[in-house]
Image 1 (cartoon, helix red, strand yellow):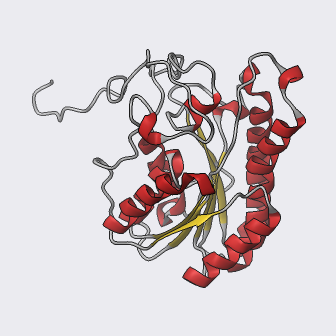
Image 2 (image 1 turned 45 degrees about the horizontal axis):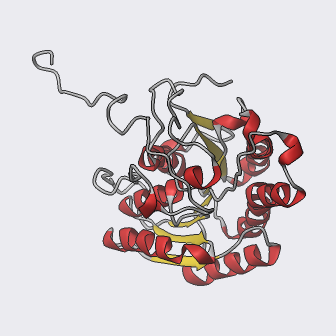
Length: 296
């Protein structure tokens, strides 16, 4: 270390790198069965009141990026209502614990956003709990790797991917919007796949490209109302979706510029920034967090 300068962690060594033990799970996956265990920022994220007394709704907040964002929002002073699938109740309990330990309200709502009625009930619940929604994070997503190409993508799979990734986001933006005041924020989760699609994730990548376009178009619509709309485009992130939907995860993330996948906790600061007043002049932006993959 150079004298007089603080020592900073090497980002290539900060978290585990492949080769990971081979593992296989059924969707939606289980955090407790993953090796290595994902890091959501439990021991490292420090808040600074940037979201004090905000009310946030996060889809897919039970695990992965959603849990990390819920934790970070709570430590920044926000109350959090988040969705989870019914079979993810145990995962949701852990997110609730992290939020309440930060001294904020946690509301876990079983909800499959593929249903328009479910999205309507979710909106009603959020308004009943909070009165308003300052931050909407559309994070829930589904993928299923198909190494054999488009011939193996069934209509059932295609419907699940499109309804989860696009329909749910569209419905919730439309339904929650009347309850978002000026100064509020919508943050969508897209992906590096929107720009650099993997052949085995054709349908998933297509939806992530759609999220980019939707984000930019909605931002233009809502700017006169003082509501900002942005997105985060993660690269490979070590979440339960990965071992439950990809046939081989031993080298997952090895091709990133940093030689490893991101941990969910490394994504959360991007969402905090976009939700905060620090980003008050930022809208229609896609914040890339790809670990070194250059994007447009």
